[in-house]
Image (cartoon, rainbow, N blue to C red; front, side, top):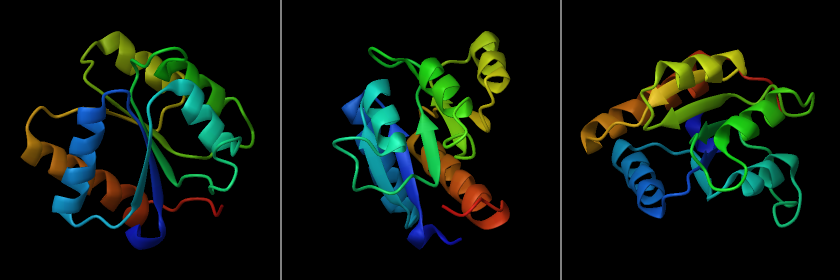
Length: 144
C-alpha cells in the first residue's frame, strides 16, 4: 500500500496543531489524504461511517490526540479497539502528554503506537515521515 492511496484520520481539537500537521505532511512530500476531525464524537462517526461521514471510506490509520473535548481520545481508542469492525484500524496516539501512565494506558487499550508530539517543526516532519514509512511501506495492513 503506497501513501498515495491511503487516508489518515487526524483527531485533533487544536486547529493550529491540525494545520501544522497538514503543512508538515506537505513539506515531507507525504501523499496520504489527511482528513481532520476535532473531537471524539466526530472521530467515532467517521470510522463508523455515520452521518455526516457516511460517504467516506474507513481510514487506513488514525492519529489520535488524547485530550479532546467531550468524548476524549482514551474513550475513542477503547471504542475502536473493542469493536470487531474497527479494531484492525491502526491507531497511533499522538499527544503532548509525556506521562508514563498515559503511555501505559494507551498500550493497555491496544493502541498500535504512542508518539509524543514534537514541539519542533522539523521533528514533526521526521515523525510523520517515519509513521507513514512504517505503516504504509513496512507494515502489512488488512484490506478495507
